[in-house]
Amino acid sequence: MQLLDLIKQNSNQIPASYLEQSEQEMIKQIQAIKDFFGEKLYIPGHHYQKDEVIKFADDTGDSLQLARLAQQNKAAEYIVFCGVHFMAETADMLTGDNQKVILPDMRAGCSMADMADIIQTHYCWNELHQLFGDTITPLTYVNSTADIKAFVGKHQGATVTSSNAKQMVQWALTQKQRILFLPDQHLGRNTAYDLGIPLTEMAVWDPIKQELEYTGDVQAIRVILWKGHCSVHENFTTKNSSYTREHEPDRKIIVHPECKWEVVQQADFAGSTNYIIETIKAAPAGTKWSIGTEMNLVKRLIQQNPDKDIVSLNPYMCPCLTMNRIDLPHLLWALDTLKNGEMINQIKVDERTTRYANMALEKMLATV
Image (cartoon, rainbow, N blue to C red):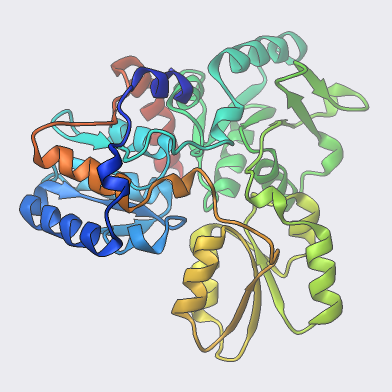
């Protein structure tokens, strides 16, 4: 089921009373509810969340890290996931049947994950098999829906993260001659290129036009990239990098591999969210950095590293809009209804999808 269907199915709208409260009132109530539930409540918060939400997070991290922490937390009956829909899905698939995963706002989706739906993927897979036969191993970024993870698991593929993408692409190419990389073309392209695969051996599958974008002998293709992207990271451009090089040549550029290939090539460093955080933390005092990733995280890194000069690579960037759907009113609403014996916005993945999706997740965990 796609996120849009879930939103339509869930008719609950946040009552106006939560939107009318002051920040201090909400902070006081959220803390009181956390104290009330104790270890029965677990709140994971993604790095891209607002500071007002992160202050209540029991753990902060990337999507898979938080899902695994939720899996390890056997005491928690309620997991209120402050992130986006696919992250809550992964948490539900990894946690026990007695644990309930809740997303404070069902509108908190991911445009990248929504760029690959299961109908499009089945069509693509059939077309590619007619062209290449049984020579393709599917890989999907964890930033994908449970349906796509299940598809990949069913076809002997695996999930990847931005931290382990190189290892997983290497593994996949030992299994079969080619890979299909969903749903982020930029992470796939940057990873394959770093492993020595030339751009001339990469093609793009366009799910809208339902065609393979490639010029040349298709039998030379080793990597097929799904035409999807992160709406935040795609907004960093080579113009941003060129401006920084021209005006501040001593400022280092570090970007996330969800950025375009051209932007990554111009950067000094590229890596996962955790890589960016750890690189900035370890950098000498007085160093200057321009960071190409989500704005809430950049602002947090500025606050946490006052001894360094940090700016966003694109000064006009805004935070991830869907991630920012989670705010104090929605967090309070989710917690308050739990305290009153109700439950809103529960995320539950069916048993069959969970079984196949976990196969893809487990294959990754066994490989890295």
